[in-house]
Length: 119
Ligand code: SF4
Image (cartoon, rainbow, N blue to C red; front, side, top):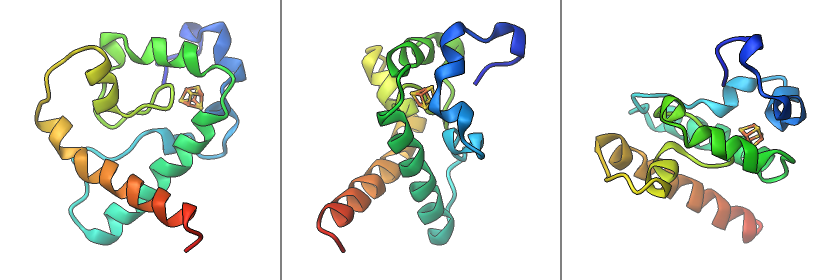
């Protein structure tokens, strides 16, 4: 998330993602994978990251950081939000990257429905 240790904000020490053994979960592939099995893995990894975000005590602070232009990277999760969600919050128009993310959101929704139905 941050380029160097010197730039870390104080809230960073309480971030759930910093305690996780695989901090790369909070970055997903761009360009997006074209192979179905790779896509499925990306959807699963992003869903795990979003679950951690939902329980993170510094989610608000993280989202504020993730809305800064410098952190508006495609393929990054900040404050429990994907790139396209953060763009939308900022009132930015959809672009190609936004459209590319639709399959990811559709996959996350399918996964969530499956989990909720206990399948
Ligand atoms: S909200 Fe998510 S990305 Fe942000 S610090 Fe917490 S776990 Fe990390």
